[in-house]
Length: 130
Image (cartoon, rainbow, N blue to C red):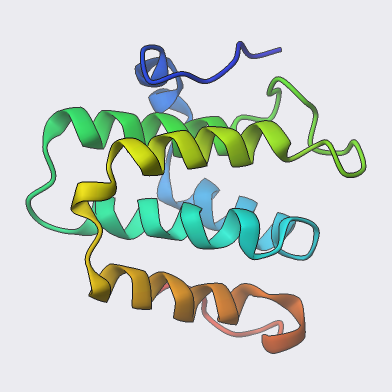
């Protein structure tokens, strides 16, 4: 089981992050987590993809996204209602730490992608990556 995600230990989770696993996890939890997890996770993802992000902020983002992907986290994802709370907390903490990197364009990109990933709005064969 993983320890609680903090800004100080974010680097420990970076090894769990890769883009393919990120998209697979988002697709898998979209219905369960809804926009409470999807939108901020996508904001972090698009900040990471943007140009001038300081290394410290990249480390926090990669750590938080790695924690999201980690199969054995503090609260197992299969637990009803509680399973994603630690993931949401980690993503929220990281987002707050790197919010100076958010732009209106990133927010819009994350919003559009969140809408695509939500089960009611997305055909199952749609490519979700922009």
